Amino acid sequence: MKELLEYIENSEDPQINFNIGEWYENQGYISPALSFYLRCADRSDDINLRYKALLKIFVCYDKAGDRDFVAKSALKSAIALCPDRVEAYFLLCQFHEYRTNYIDSYMNASIAISLLPKKYEVEDFVKYPGDHALYFLKACSAWHVGKPDESRQIYRYILENMNEDLDKTYKDLLQLNLSQLGSGGPAKAFTGYNKKNNTLKYKFDGCEEIEQNHSQVFQDICTLTLLDGKKSGTYLEIGAADPFYGSNTALLEKLGWKGIGIEYDENFVALHKIHRKNKVLCQNALDVDYEDILKEISPNSNIIDYLQLDIEPSKNTFMALTLLPTHKYKFRFITYEHDHYADVTKSFKEKSRSFLYSLGYKLLINDISPFGDHSFEDWWYHPDLVDQKRVDTIKHVDLNAVHAVENIFLT
Image (cartoon, rainbow, N blue to C red; front, side):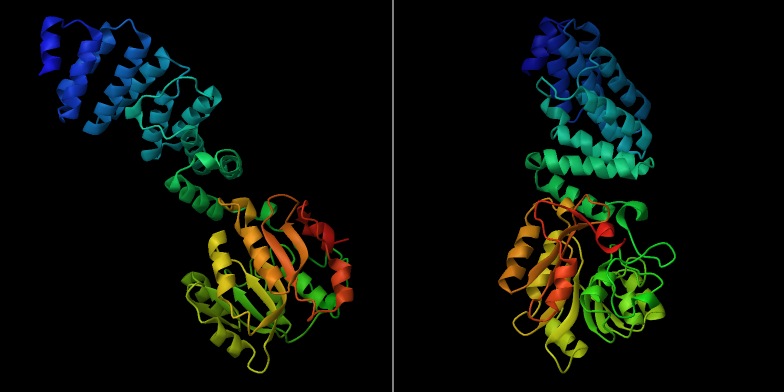
């Protein structure tokens, strides 16, 4: 072979040693490949070639398995040689993440990100997808080392600044992580009413009897405000989740409302059967005969008082909306979770708005948020089915603003 003849003629040449090492590696002979990469690293005065050989040494040891210590040592040697290059940090991040050594993965990702933007060509064999990969590794590790808020912030940074660089695999991963992590824990994602601590700004019939609500951001209070405390109303809840925590219908059910929920998670459905009266179906919201369900909810009317759409991701919520028999049924009030802050496509908020506008619905409050950031929901009403005076009282529509509902409903 050519590489071997060159080596025989000049066994001390670093590049020739590297080339024959690569030949052996490509044939699947890891041990001789390692020997020649080591010879290259020992003999070369070219920092970049030595760095490349050290990366190859790591790759070979990693392929061989059961050589974690020497594999890491090769990467650490590469970092000591060229501390301003990202490839070794990237490989070290992956190495630690695969082994659930998240604090080490987090540390190396943090250092590598501090070096960006890189100004050199990355070796192909490293399989470096792009700078976004470092951010993904840091976000994943941050979650596992007890930094959930930082993890969310990093994923949102990727969405806002790197989305166009992502292939389908990374886009799907980003969508999944954004949806699962949500907008934060209770302190950041939930704001509610408690009679002992708060005063409702807008009164409705029976409001003085309500001790507290259950919704994430006043969906139940808004429903009752818009419909003047209506008793014995009707609802369809697409995405029922927990029977009380963050539930938009638990308070309504207490007031005599009848309705049906759709929930994919059988654990939540089991809890509803224990703690709630109204039915929750354990079904995929995209595989439901909604006309039959609406007939069961309201056998003598084609008007439903409240519709909730809240599943994940944004695409599925929109698909569920389009599956409803809107040619036969109308809804007085709709809360639609578009999850714009977590929508990788940044398209489904506008798609849902175009669709609902075409059906005659109007925005009541756009871009809902617990505290004025990370817009995730729009609220709609049908102008033929609600009191316009009550609409005018609580309506907040400004398409350039995110609305913190706490400021709207509490004094």
